[in-house]
Image (cartoon, rainbow, N blue to C red; front, side):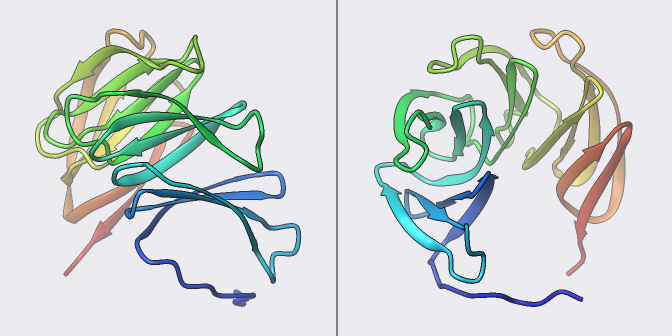
Length: 197
């Protein structure tokens, strides 16, 4: 019984992450907005970080948010002051970053036709690239679970062994009936959003 509690329009909204009573939202216009959602019926905009390029998605790990930015790469954002995020660093990617996920001390980024790029966040302020793996097609979505990375490239879902993050190995792939747009993994299972026109 899903019920809409509130609605506020923001152009080009793309990615969301929730930490406690705060909602972080990136949008293609280069902004990261912070909302207080203590009252979910009335989200309160409390901060806007400008200066990003074309952010698509973000993931929060500890006191940092990491943004997959299609024009800048991986942007590390400090949440030391969680109500006022600030950019810590920018790490370039080998292709346009469209999605990002994490496992342990590593980030995994979907970078289009260049595949996936792995970053170490042992220094949380400065992600360092440790591997890139081409998977064929344009990778647009990634998800991790149980030392596996799942990815979609609009044509298929692919699975990669990431037990050694600096040396990822593709295990297999499966074509989907239509356009594989997004993937979410739970255990050894992947759920794929397959867009049929």
